[in-house]
Length: 268
Image (cartoon, rainbow, N blue to C red; front, side, top):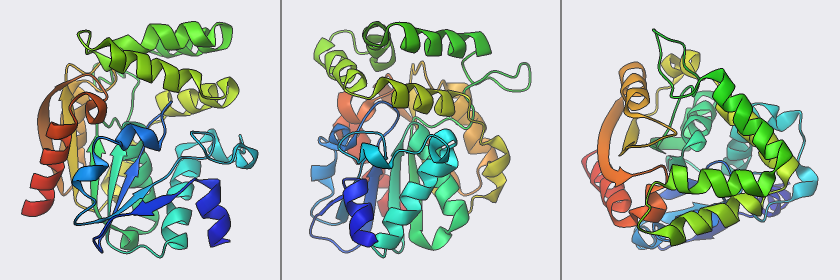
């Protein structure tokens, strides 16, 4: 069973340290997105990379639209990987939606986790004004999903430079666009729908694992109001505003990303 999960999620384990540090990718991405950050942790940690089922080099045959019709299905991936590797007190670094996926997994079994590090997270992307600002109206999300159905490559070409938000480095937008386009369109659309319609606000008070929220500046996916809300409602959380712009600082600003993670872990 453990071998099957390792293969299913394309799990990679390396590094010289003992404490596990798990890097979890966001929507439309895979574990390759962490390649500029993981070298900074190989010396002192047991580095673990994986792809969610339906992403990267995972086993597409294991994709179940019912299981992965909710973030809990992706959290189950994390829990099963943790069990297969017999993890304890792991540091979980989750980009974007993976911040909430890691939190949901930690609520089920906190023994696996020592700290959660959330990079550009959002507990809810939809606005519920005036009480909550998530950054998107429902019609925005529906237009995005419709574009994915009608013209998948056009959607990727349109969205990538907006969310990367580093116009002087178009190679980053090009890489992100290629990552989007390499996904199965049907699976990608469901993951997008599950992500952008997710609402984890009621779960925040159930989380107990200490967490670091890395809030990117000028982030079109997770604006500053979202980071403030998350910090206010997530106990044992630390909020750190980054200089990095956009939603992918592990690609655009890997040095700052690595440094802030290290500083937090050193002081924790």
